[in-house]
Amino acid sequence: MNRGESSFFRNSTHPSWESGMEHSLEQQPSTDCVLRLPKEGLFGVADGKAGSKEAAQVVLTEAVEGLGNRFDETLNRLRARGFSDAQIAVSVSMAMNGLFQRAHAALRGQARDGRPVLATGTVAKLHAFPDGTKYLYLGHVGDTRAWRFVPEDSGGRLERLTTDDSQLTRWVAEGKITTAEAESVEQYRSKTELSGPYGAELPAAAGRLHNILGHEQPFSVQFLAEPLSEKDIIILTNNRVHGNMTPDEIRQIAALPLSDDAVAKQLQKTAEEIGRRAPGTHGRDRRMAGDAAAVVVRVGEWRPRS
Image (cartoon, rainbow, N blue to C red):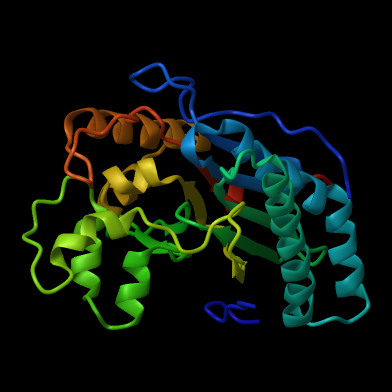
């Protein structure tokens, strides 16, 4: 599979859980978790809705169970047996769908008194084949995001790899609003005048998800498989980061000559500072400005388990 040609279609280790920030401004527990298992090439960001950090942990635990180190051995065996990159991508997509299905079932089992336990998440699996080629496999549900940053002389190029499962995105696809209108509303500090028949409804639509884990309605998993170059930097963010920051602000921080962890912390810090001083999408001051989470992986410096 050539660059730019994308495919959309149990190893048990306990991950080290981290949150974007331990407490929000009102001292409410963070509902976001990030996963970093570099040797397994496994990274993720998950968001537990309605104040449930445990829901986010469910998603990332299933990611570890389904895509741990033995999964790398499986991919190498498939390549050795002559499977094409597209065929291998199908195998990964099945595993990715499986882990999200298990997370969904676990969350449904936690529902009490008719109140669902909901979560969204983006899981990134990086794999290095024996011939040196590296691949990115992404699974995504909800409003967390994955990005690819490519350093260039002009300051670098930031590419968004996932699509939000929001009402706003659906309206863009249906031609009811323009991409420009959607992008302006997605920024919490946007002062753009909202016009047209859907203008008054746009702010609420930005946070209304039609695809989410734990809900009684069926869900689907976005899947992406792409080859990676050594220059690529993969970035995962929750909606507190990309909701407060413009893509250009994310790009500028990604271009800084810092370590992966330092870039991730700078993204979180900047998003939190903006969130504390900016009005929210729904016309009120943001109440979870500290709840930002990001993961950064420089492909050229990433070293999988040998």
